[in-house]
Length: 289
Ligand code: PDD
Image 1 (cartoon, protein in one colour):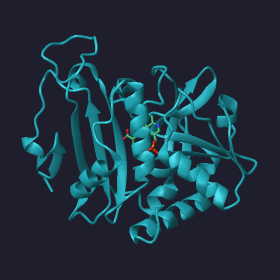
Image 2 (cartoon, rainbow, N blue to C red; image 1 turned 45 degrees about the vertical axis):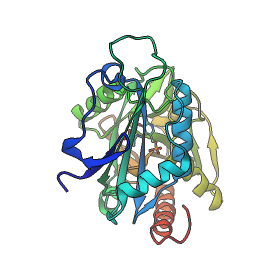
Image 3 (cartoon, helix red, strand yellow; image 1 turned 135 degrees about the vertical axis):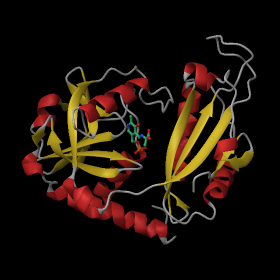
């Protein structure tokens, strides 16, 4: 679909007809927040969790939610209607367009609400087993990384540096601690224990991250939310990066060297099986995953 229908401010219209003002504060200041919500076989994945996080992001930037849960559900369902394949929905809300450019937050603006769905292709099993390369980089982002802000310049530069160095993702290091990726959360495995850094202002509370912990819990796999220092990362038995669109990725190269024999570890296989089974249940409409 070259010119799919998208949602903009109450209307569904072809992508090439969607227009916003150059005075939109999202355009001028990056003044807005977003979500990326997968849909499998027409079923929205962890919608409540995504909408709860959206509400938290909006509150953090002093905006009221423009729609309620039922209205979001209706909008998103209409957006993916007639698209049975897997979709990634991008949903963005900015503070809206003012009559001038001024840092001060204007009162009473109408927010700009935009949503589009794009087909997603999670990696094929062989691809997933090949894993990804990562490099460690200093975390140059701001102090509110828990907010899913559209202001992503630092993330973009970090990701590009990883790509320039023949890697897929950057693992960000702050004060000697490994935090998360430029667009993903971080897990390590050490002596059979699955570890991910605790939630806080330094990282995005990933929906995939939470699901991985729930799957570990339900399978009786030991896990901990604990900080990971750089040495623990470098000497981990397994490293995984997680996100809604890329699921659970095994790190098989780190800083230009094969990591742990260049193969995913046994717990990655176990979690991936559980994750795929969960998606299949959702796809069949059997249960919420
Ligand atoms: N990014 N950390 C950061 C900085 C991210 O940008 C993302 C996701 C995640 C993983 O969150 P989740 O599991 O909820 O997708 C962690 C999205 C996919 C993006 O910006 O496109």
